[in-house]
Image 1 (cartoon, helix red, strand yellow):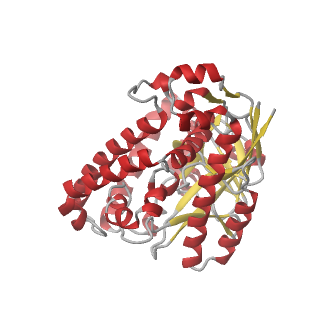
Image 2 (cartoon, rainbow, N blue to C red):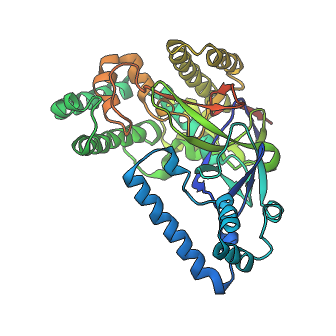
Amino acid sequence: MKLSLKTLTPVHVGNGEKYNGLSYLVNKEKVLIYDSAKVMENVTSRFSERFMQWIEQTTNEIEQLEIQKRNERNEQKRRNINQLIRDAQKKLSLREFIENSVKDITTRTRFSNNFLYYVEAKSQVYNNVDIDCYIKQNNKPYIPGTEVKGAIRTAIAFNLLKIEEHWDFLSKELEKFRNRNKNDLQQIPGQKGKKTNEIKRQLVSQMGKIEEELQTRLFRVKNNNDAKFDLLKLLSIGDTELKDPNTSLFISNLTVEGISRTFQLFQELCKENTSFTCQGFRLENNTTIINKLGFSPEQMWVISDIKNILQCCCDFTNRLLQEEIDFFKRINKPEIVAKLQNIQKQNTPDSPVIRIGKNEGYLSLTMGLLVKDRDPMLYNNVLCHATKNTSYTGNFPKTRRLVYVSNNELDTIGWVKLTVES
């Protein structure tokens, strides 16, 4: 079998790294990406110590400025490629340093001819901001199979959790959690500070243990916590093919909806309507093997046919999309509601939609939605306060991220359509 993926919106799958001012150069509507290590290597041994002193001095200056006055003007003091060139033009010592230490890179033109690849800028990108990198191999983006499998796992968990045996376990554990942490749960909603953060860490740790036990019950053979007997060991999903970064990626600013404060968040994202293929897609659903492994009837139903897995994805995404639609209706974003409703129409049992990537949100990652449906009081008074996010009561989580796909147009993030081919 072959699994095809089509991005319905921009998608960001991060690799944990960021581009800084020495990794890129903004050139009108393009962002030229450099290997910052190569930039450093271009500095000769004679001047490398001086270069490092320049970086260190600049960093110290920034830290002092931020201590004195934290505002956007201080951010503009950060060093980057443009600043390097401008300083070289202003000061003789720096000009001499640039001309003698950086091999074949003495002007903006020569810099522009030595980039790894370029990406389109969908919003104004400054030369001194950090940009979250999209995951790549050999500078070419792809979608990891583990990312897709993780989204499928969440969808299956959502469906299996509806079984009364599993729901009873979870609700009882959450009630115990509530009773055990009653005072802390009453103190922290909307609060900040060192003490609150410590309470949150303890609550998150305890909730993590409950969720770990729940995952074992949902996906492992009863009374056997061996990872070899995990339900999704029978499902294999390989990484997709690599894409051309010049045509498949873009960089843009994100906005956080639901709060009055503004943030400067930049990411490298995969464009919508980009198609990927997972060749290593396989389901080991031999009935004899499944029976011998000892899975429950409900678990066996999930894994017995790929159609059942796709059905789980469709069911969960329908619920998730409705939650997102309701949120954007409340904050009066009709253009986003229309986009989500269009995605909803494309979510079908034989070709479902999933949500992947960094911006998918709390509801896509946990048992939260079903708890919210079955016991809203338990969700608002207990579960939402045992997350790494800020604690709020009612309509938690409070915020969503959107990305600029042009100067005035925003889009939601992370939606991908799956199609299985024989």
